[in-house]
Length: 167
Image (cartoon, rainbow, N blue to C red; front, side, top):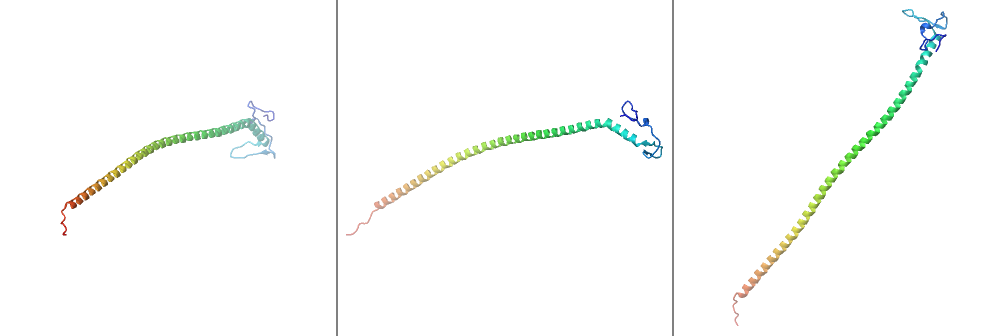
């Protein structure tokens, strides 16, 4: 940018290069503890325009780069979230596999217990049948002994002499 034909090698107008006109109503005069130079408003505007024209493109490029970086970070965060979800699913599948393995072990134990119970049931059934047969055999033997004793008693009664009847 060129101000009144004055421009340095960087393309900027420096404050020393400006010629300040004498004071009038369009000029700004600052006063302070030290003598502060009076600056023309047009010069300030031109300096501001030069400053902005020099730095604004870089700032806009930086803004675009930051927006792109932010967008890439959001994509990366989404991707990481998906990966975390996959890992959680893998852990869930692993836990399910452990549960199925544990269920299989308990199922095998239940099958073994069932077989043992069936075997015990069969044994008790056989023992009950045997006990019933033994009981029936003892009852028969007891009945036979009772019948034998009654026969003997009857026989003894028949053997006992009976007094003769008088006629």
